[in-house]
Amino acid sequence: MSVQQRTADGGEELEVWIDQDLCTGDGICAQYAPEVFELDIDGLAYVKGPQDELLQAPGAATPVPLPLLTDVVDSAKECPGECIHVRRVSDRVEVYGPDAE
Image (cartoon, rainbow, N blue to C red; front, side, top):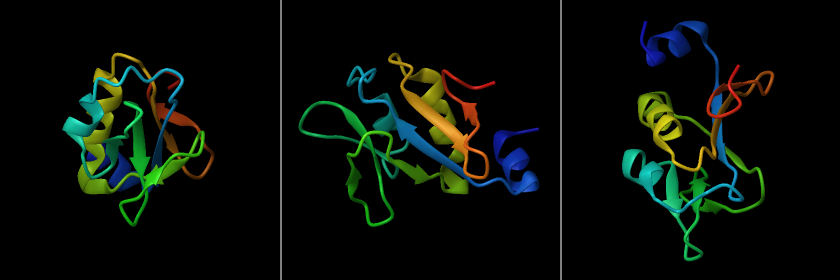
């Protein structure tokens, strides 16, 4: 079962956040999902909010749009800094990323 199917069938809303303390600034996330991630002038990656603004507060999260879920998950898997966290909104349990159960 694909990631998209599992999430769509389960009806789980997901959100993503980046731990800037671990970000290496490689920009892989922005290559995979530029609609969700962007590098700032400080060289670190941040998630973008609904109005395309960078969310720079520590731990700031943004919803994962279902059509971009695979790209966001691939970003988390490929990130050399292991700083991308994807969690369920309902219980804040990490489902993809370094702390996934």
